[in-house]
Image (tube, rainbow, N blue to C red; front, side, top):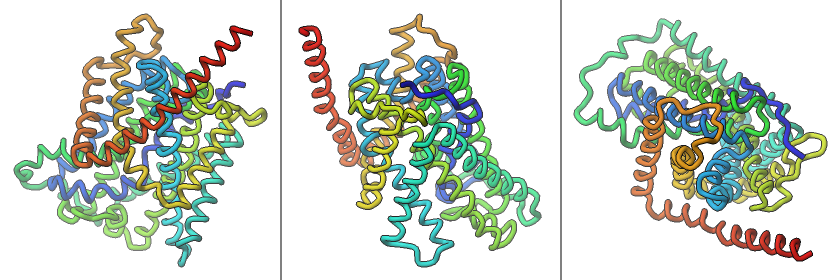
Length: 443
């Protein structure tokens, strides 16, 4: 039984925006101001990060148009390098990345809820995080349309709240446009645009490929998938630039340096401590949107693996009434709840960051591989600026991967080892499939 195409361009667009905008945009800017102590460098790195992310979106847009199926990167790696490559990514996504991300986001949401519920912590916080995971998983279990609507509500809430902060922030008389001017940047600051600050910015933009994972459930996917990827990254880049401009309007670059709760401090200056306290609202909405988006997209990878027969075949089962990958959603929820209760999700996610980067690099290279191997394959969208823009995307992610691998060689190698643990299972499944086919021929 196939999945249903019930999501439109607007749904795909809001899925991307909701999956990208998270707590990072409310906290990362203080670190960047310390590393880039000049207003135009501070704003420039957000623009540069957005431009590089758009290069990635343009690259994925062609791949998504060619393979409008559930699974995203899994499908692209499989098409370019073989089933084993897609499987290894899916293996890490199933056991670590997706449940670990859901667990981390659920704990993050509960930590903000604790601001309104004094004394919430310890075992109670973990149980509440489990309840959050089960609630959002139930929403995704009950239907793609319900899941899409839930995503739209939380994402629109986040975006509208941010736009209100931006609009009212610029109208406040407490800020100063003089904060945009400063003396010449310190020697060596320009080179830092491509150092550690860029890694932080790229990770704040991460998640821009979310719509590619639900290709089997988007209407007119050969048009809407590429369009959602491009428009989604453009919208996020604009919002990020504007909110950082508000920060700079409220605070000088010197006062921004080292500030963790940047948004709250900026709103205190522009309005009052009471208004600043409301900053937690868009953060909670953004985290909730991230939880729903991760549950929605993550289950489609294991569903695609089950459908291909390289993983447990029950994961391909589609609910007869709700038309969702029910077993995939439930399996993911159970793993996420287990990681919350064990408290190991942060360590596991730290191990596989390197693998996540390698998978994005491999998907970018897949565009070149498929252009060469299958030049006649129908491409409803062809990447604008090919081959330069895809090369920029691949080179950027490769540079970041090298930086992380050099700084944490043990952790990075452990992440690769976790991915490779899937090889015995893959070979076992392949041998089992061959044996079944041979027996069928004999019969």
